[in-house]
Length: 55
Image (tube, rainbow, N blue to C red; front, side, top):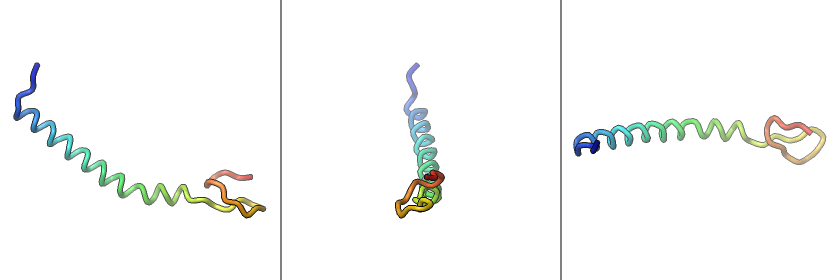
């Protein structure tokens, strides 16, 4: 079954709208994710380890 041009346009517009919303959501979440992944100092050493990993 082939899509009619109007149907194809509707599907493309819907997909673009969905992707735009996802991109906005990612832009809002990424700074929080980056803060969660910041390095914290290890106990007893001067080197940093990923958050949540202890020596």
